[in-house]
Length: 192
Image (cartoon, rainbow, N blue to C red; front, side):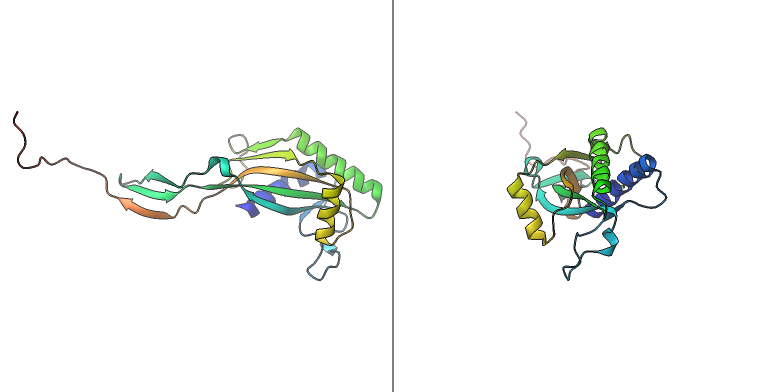
């Protein structure tokens, strides 16, 4: 579901960029900032790069197990879906610094106008995603320095958004309890 969510966000942001800047090609990629060998990725050249930098479990909505009624009226016990929050770094990776600032500003404008996506109102959302909420993650200068140092990259114009409530549900059944179809009277009933 994480991959589906990122691809959907990329698609929406890419459409916004194409409309605003009259682009014929994609301006957004999902990628690490650097290749595994530490070199700058050619795929990122003159693009807005979406990079997942953190994943954390949303603990306020967790339940250990749930019961789900099956089509034959039996009851299946399943683990509840888990909800995750992801931090996405949007890096404006352009050769020209003014272009980088222009695309960073457009990214911020996009999320200012689209603070959430809801499947009820967007038929293009992938199956399994119901809602995505976006919040700017304010990072201090030190936090920003530490993040870029940890990635081994030189700072570029960027912003971090927290995406809330990405659900992962395997739908795996742990056990099945047959439904009660009748109640039998036991021997030795009390006649009062």
